[in-house]
Length: 398
Image (cartoon, helix red, strand yellow):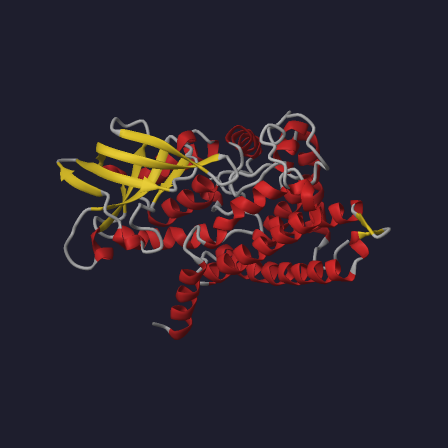
């Protein structure tokens, strides 16, 4: 037994492991093994969320009064470890990891009572309406406008790089409600029903061939003012709060999953009569990734401790966002080095759950799509350069 875990912790690990063994179908395990993005294929993600919801485990980070688990920091970490070990599918982070915590912090009681249960159950599937063609890292330059009309706003404009909008029935969005003063001061935060007339979704196909991203157009879309979170023209404060949760995730678990996958593949790969896993050059690169994973785990535990105490993630979430993105990209690069030419075949059908056997090892199948998809990690949620600016300002108290 690992010395950092108590007998009670190990008993909890046993409970989690038993639940996964009994409830995680082979189809869901296969979906987890074939995951190539931050985003899981929608059907598998929602099926996995339903299992967790039925168990009461859908939102470990939420307070118990809103449907959270009331787990300790250690229990949350153990749960993440066991899910990685079992290769569970991912869950869409937009509702459970982002919109939910934002509503707990900024929503009215009516908004909490209506939206939080539907986020937990998966009835509401959320997407994010932030970036625009002329407003990405410089998000405050957004132009999508919400004009006042009685008890409603009339929204016109467009959002881009909207992940899984094609599967979503709700969007949280930043819109401009005033053109006076500083650009940040004229922004409001809205919750938009994606079935509202005037919304059009156009697909954007990723580099590796998947449909994950979209551009969303708004043409005289009517949104009730009751769907505004926070005060009018103060949506920037809400967005900054939410971004702290977007930028924080337990990436070390994903990194260790990729490290273990690469190690298994190296064990299968023979060069000059020996397993690649005994090659000094390979072991040096793998050891550096292991060191980075340990450093990330320590920082993640600090953030989890802050969250457990009822505090916000803070600027350390930006540190982790930048470091984890760059480290995961390096891990992808090493995995592709090991896969060599077996990483080259384009096999979208084999990546489907229940798809045919791939060319080469099943371990190599998701590596190249994952490598290409993860190129965007140093941009998503704010570019690595933006994250470093946030950290510098926090240190210098600017």
